[in-house]
Image 1 (spheres, rainbow, N blue to C red):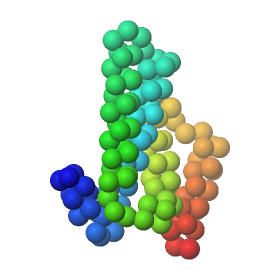
Image 2: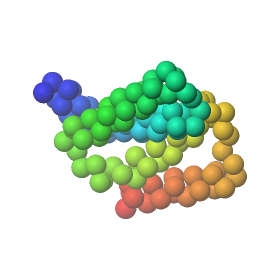
Image 3: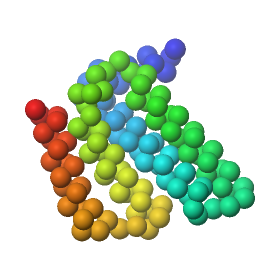
Image 4: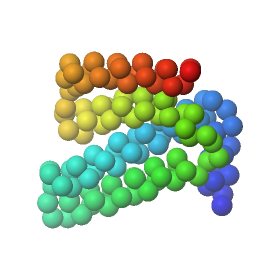
Length: 120
């Protein structure tokens, strides 16, 4: 499968793995936001398109995360940090939601935990 080969080439070096993790985190956060929109913010055809967009985005996320031959568990710390950061960006851009102080404090802890997992 050519897509697996392409993704495997990306994860050979750290910067490529980081790019793929960022893409995966974005796809997961965006897919979740599409379902959020479909369930609570849209109706009719917009609802159907939001569900479809969410399904396609989450399927692409699953492909990006699972197709390459990498030890995803070792990269989990970086992934969780990227997911948190990209989810906050998606929340701000798509829903106009700014992070509150508890979210910022929790996010700092998530980032610290990501460093511990990655370095440790």
